[in-house]
Amino acid sequence: MSFIRTISGDILPDQLGFTYSHEHIVCSPPYWIEQEQDDLLLDDKEKSLLDVQDLKNVGVKTIVDATCVDYGRDILAVKEISDRTGMQVIATAGFNKGFLWSAKVLGENYTFYEKIENSSIDDLVKFIVSDVEEGIGTTGIRCGQIKFGTGYNSIHPLELKVLKAAARAHLITKAPLHSHTEAGTMALEQIEYLKKEGINLEYISFGHMDRNLDPWIHNKIAENGSFLCFDGIGKIKYAPESERIKCILELVKQGYEEQILISGDFARKSYFSHYGYGPGYKYIVKTWIPRFKEEADRAGLDSNQLINKFFVENPKRCLSFKI
Image (cartoon, rainbow, N blue to C red; front, side, top):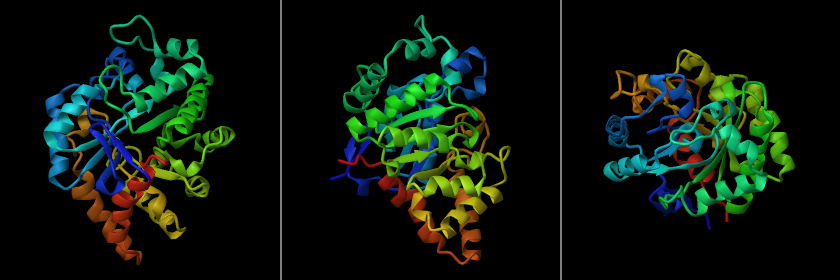
């Protein structure tokens, strides 16, 4: 029997509903605080709540909050938003990526770099497993996926250490895995290390696939049965929507429509409607989906079926604990 773990409790996969697979809701990353990058601080609970409510109002039922401990998550604020809006939220265990680890942790006298360097892999496994099985700190709020990440065209030794710990925590907990690929790089290299850890690659999603719009890379990842997360929707500075849609449709034509996830990865104030005047969480539903459906229909595909797969059926399988 499979289940999905939300911050409010475990649910059956059929209860997941329409899902955004990679977002951020409330977070204050120590690195971006140190760099005085206010745009990257989602630090107003009430404004975040308004964007979440907008999303709930257009029919989205679940958000995957991909905010790890090193990205300054505020799980109690996120839980309050979930309770007040009725939005199901899935929290994330593990760590993000190496360059974030250099900043001092607020209220503490260490960096995550020091924490990870001074911990054994077994220590890191126990930390991740605890977030999944017991809860984050003393909150009792449990995580529903495990994340690791690597840098741009590189894997730092400590990032590899975290990858191994995340993989081993997955084998213990059966929680789904999620990978951060900086600018869409190093996914194939990550796969080789995951294979050495005995990971079934059907249980992992690779993020930021639309930061590297390379159909050959996408196909190589998809051949392993992995999920590909196109989570930069609305971020035109990286690529026009036409190129994202072209790559998604190419994967569909290759028969990989059951491995595609869609989201926005909104982690800046300027992306949100209620912090500033950005497109907001609802952009995907209100603007992107109609455009995608038009282009899919023009290509002779069943656009309604594809949207149901990307936002309902695929997340339901991807986010399930395999027990």
